[in-house]
Length: 168
Image (tube, rainbow, N blue to C red; front, side, top):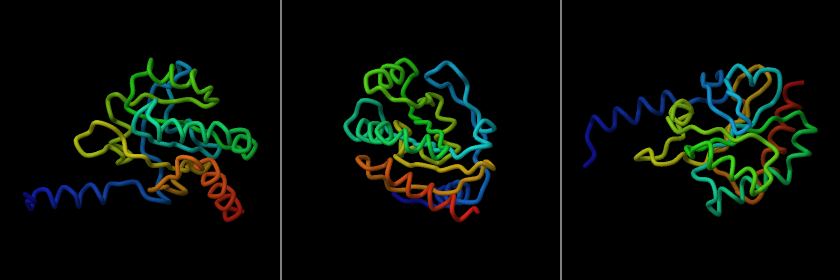
């Protein structure tokens, strides 16, 4: 049953969702290399934050491997990549090692990043697949609401190339 309370909650959530042009939400998360990644760390370069539901699942593996395969081109373009899921850090370390991922993965077991970026799926069991491109000033430059897991590296590169050209 849909109530007025649910409707108001949905409106509040929609208003609070980060949008293009806004500063990246404040966050901190544990990465697979043992560091803490903070929102302030994103300033000074183009950054991709990609949220994915669960390590070792077919779609998430395809997306991670696509970004791995396109990593050198993205890195040459000055892009830093972080993958974020609710998986525990030990699972993410295994996922990174098994698929030779050259970028860090961030564990969001307390769901604070997913909440800040409004990627937490209904019932809070996983994050929705969504990618944010952050500009060197720490602002959201692009949001992928839909992702082609097999070609996400190309989607990201096209968006970054377009955004960099528009910024000049």
